[in-house]
Amino acid sequence: MTLKATLDQHNVTLVAVSKTYPPERIMAEYEKGQRIFGENRVQELTAKYEALPKDIQWHQIGHLQRNKIKYIASFVHLIHAVDSFELLQEIDRQAAKYERIIDCLLQFHIAKEDTKFGFSEEEAVALLEQQPWLHLQHVRICGVMGMATYTDDETVVRQEFRQLKKIFEHLRQRFFADAPSFKEISMGMSGDWHIAVEEGSTMVRIGSLIFGSRN
Ligand SMILES: *Cc1c(COP(=O)(O)O)cnc(C)c1O
Image 1 (cartoon, rainbow, N blue to C red):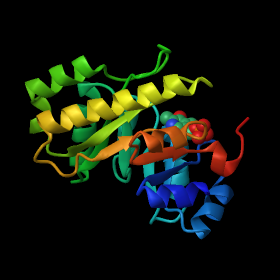
Image 2: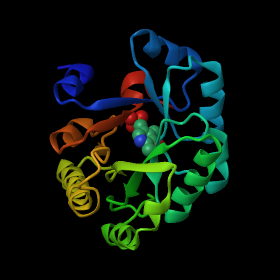
Image 3: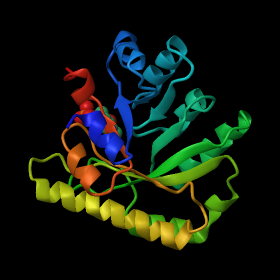
């Protein structure tokens, strides 16, 4: 089955990761019906937002610096990689200026590599228990995001996705039982999306499989 048919069957949202690819390539996917695109660099994201049709939903998928939020706060649709309360607070502050509520995912560190950002489950629980985030009126926590270890060992990748799904279920029961908008598990990329879908992903972030390999 093709990527799109499989995702449709499982009700999984496709974020087409267009970082490094020029606007023409994005337009080619747009013409085929794709409306959700993901970028990981703010400067590139804002340039593409300005150049391309306004019904595109732009997702910020990579690590985000606090001082860059102001450039995307007026239009960004979902921020995938929130890894601190300070970041969430600043997103809230910037969103307030535009009278918006910005949807966010909490990023979890599930991979073996320590180069990847994200909360541990304990850190997130400690933060959510203190509840300062409940006072933020301009952000909505919609779920979790994670990246698996970059390895050919499917067992490792599967175990990490399973761990993220467990974290999601745990947080949902404990903190978001009354929040139907807490529903997203953003996991799976070009090399591991099929495993992610089997393990309960609701949103995959796929670049090279759609656009071809990046340099
Ligand atoms: C680049 C990137 C992707 C997509 O990677 P591919 O291997 O090209 O599918 C997904 N998520 C994040 C956070 C990325 O930076």
